[in-house]
Length: 158
Image 1: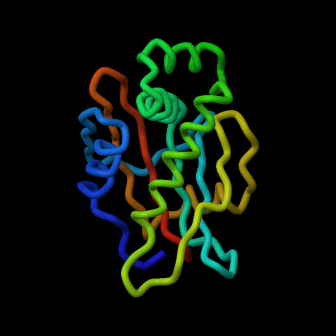
Image 2: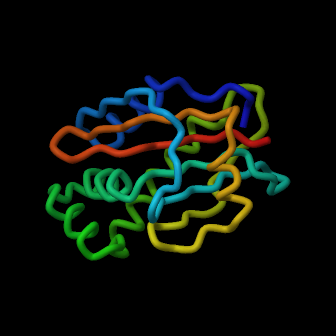
């Protein structure tokens, strides 16, 4: 990923277009420990980490439900169950795959989605290290109209 992270507006516009609902974003402080994050790992062609996206479980459930035209109750049911259903996990993977477009910059190295860790799945320590690093990162509170909100963190590679 290029040293320059996408602007919050780029993330908002992409999510709004993808899920067909209004999305608002506000700058947020980097999180402390997040319980059951959804994590996407992006790599360069040489498999070095290009970036990591982390989302709080409620936001991951909301985005996955919204993109699949599932009412907010479906996201709430996932939270009550403590995990995403296979369909919501697939929807989340599709969202993260589309987010790859924000990480590929003109003239920069190619970036691709490498892995998704759904809420509750074990996240490798090196990946967690990226999410906790300060520096080249963007933290947003993302809200989806009709759903809830949650923290979205994008951390650039080192």
